[in-house]
Image 1 (cartoon, rainbow, N blue to C red):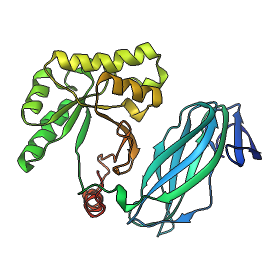
Image 2 (cartoon, one colour):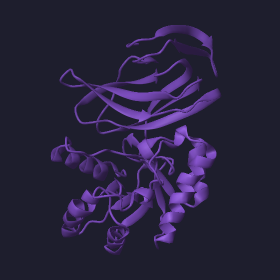
Image 3 (cartoon, helix red, strand yellow):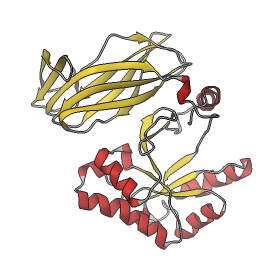
Length: 300
């Protein structure tokens, strides 16, 4: 653990199937407290799935720690398991970066509360979960005007299409967000227009009525403007099983979180993975990921 808090660790405690481990945090101010296992060797040419059984009185974090061949460490946040008063299973896919030689999983408390874990496992994803071919999807969140001004021309010139996820109550808000006419132009270019709530608030911090207003309300906003949204993106990648169900009930066919990784055919289609690209992402690393998706027949 690190930061400012009081922590107690207990092992063994009664588990789901055997001996479990428990961490309890009080007087939390900063940092985290966590369980992890000894680093295990992995290969960048493989894809893995981690799972554990847990009970938690607060939302927790799952992060992968990679040991790189040069002795440094890299980290990927892969999930945010929700509160569970009884044993609940959580799983996440892991895309191993080039140069990684081993990994461990950090299941962390980042607030006051307790976390108990059991039945942790890390397994290689079988070849049978491959798609028939590798696939790449470009997505742009929020409906920013810079996407229309910059990305649209580059993609059109390359003959590529993308998915744009719109915060419906931000449309036309100053110079930062696209107008409805811009979004219609993107649709007419052959791009997908999807939902991203009305106000981009964290859905996990809202009541069920507020969540419905954000998800169904933004869906109806898009319908009113002549769009037919088929997929959805959770603001901040924050979701839980109840929010997934709301998205499905609204009529969306799939939804994306914000977990670092590629998709196998067995992934939860209402919790799809992505890999973030920003100003610090090199062209060579993007190219390596595309080549990996092609070689392993994954969806990037």
